[in-house]
Amino acid sequence: MKKRIAIFISGRGSNMEAIAGQARDGILRDVCEIVLVFSNRPDAAGLKIAENMGISTACIPSAGKKRGEFDRDVLQLLQPLNIDLIVLAGYMRLLSPVLIRAYPDRIVNIHPADTRAYQGIDAYAWAFDNKLPKTYITVHFVDEGMDTGEIIAQRELNIKGLKTLEQIEEKGLALEHEMYSEVLRDLCKNT
Ligand code: GRF
Image (cartoon, rainbow, N blue to C red; front, side, top):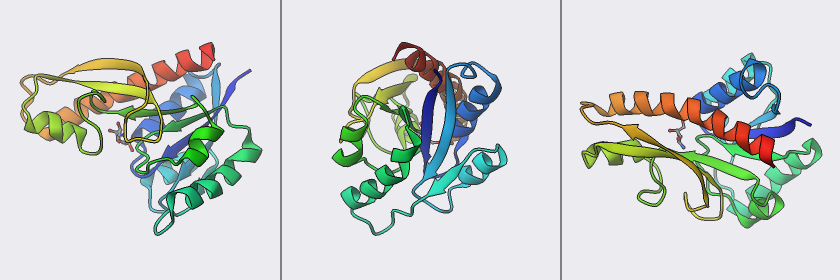
């Protein structure tokens, strides 16, 4: 049985696009289907991309809402869809216990650093500012903390000699796009 996936985004949606492409005709084709792309921001560019790919989208604006309240609304939206796995891809909101408990070990995130070394936004800028020769991309289970859940997989990103933050981001995103689908394929097969 193919796993039913909801992808959560807040912005650009390039990871979502890569995963949806692999689910359509690549390495995820036989293991999952993207049932929904959800955003907490109506202006997320990724929503349009998903629509153009023929994927169902939904948005519940989170601005001004309490975390628990908002997540209860999200849960109501998800429940009839029988979602097996929630994939966070640039989703800029901490999840409350309402969602974490409803999907135990079934929510994953990608973070462009070693989550043991750096959590939160601007992780490529952190690597750049600290002149690191290498950094990591991490896929991890999501708990209530910011980038604190159990690590599922990590890939090394060599950034030695790269001169600008843009170069680091470009190389890092390419690795994110490749890695996330590979990790999801294994998760879908083994759970
Ligand atoms: C990615 O760098 C991801 O690792 C981080 O947020 C960024 C989202 O980019 N969590 P996109 O929306 O997938 O293009």
